[in-house]
Image 1 (tube, rainbow, N blue to C red):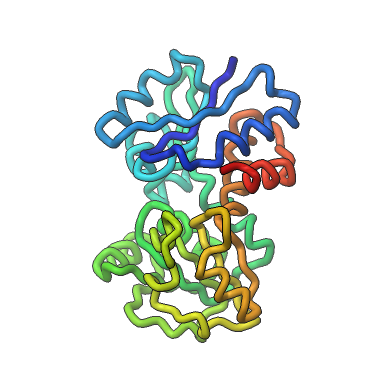
Image 2 (image 1 turned 135 degrees about the vertical axis):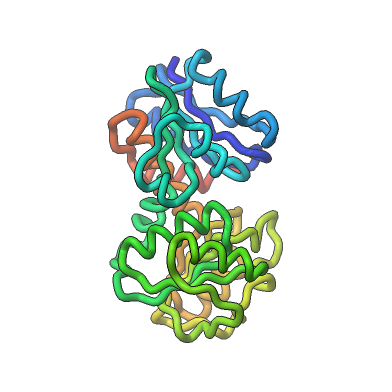
Length: 265
């Protein structure tokens, strides 16, 4: 049995196991591959990664709070993971652990339209925000970053590019991406962000990387204003598909993954 996993803390809420196992079954790999969830805290992360290859694991997704540690733990890293400074995908090989980042291309895949020349506002300054900022800049967008802690936003743009803002004017932007913790646990994410429900318009695209059973307050407000919205489950599907292709060499069925992710709880 070839084993795969998502590693985080906490991780019981993750829909990745249901989504990835459905994709593996659809690809005809269900009897030989299995994807699971592993909860490990920051103190135990490195030791857990070290034991996984001998337990039959061929790869793993990495989520909060381990994305930076995943990069540091690896013996080799892709150019994108190195530039971003975080990894969400690990590949266990005879030569060691390889780190990659599918958050960045997963975001771009989910947008389904070019972002070159557009003005984007990113909420957050953590590992997910690093991937978002890097991806948008690489695609030619003009990117501003807001974080509740302005110093963290400043540090991020100094490292990767873009401009830090403290009081953004929502009307100036074509694309919004919430990669912060706003909305986690079902809280009112919109209340924690520097935008109001009436700030959006029909020409904008609003992405919320936080996912749940219902649309977030941010996406509800954006949708009511006529903006196009992309939820966190679509991001999960897109980055998960990229990871699965890295591990298996096969392209999974996105519709199968979407159905499984949205029906899981």
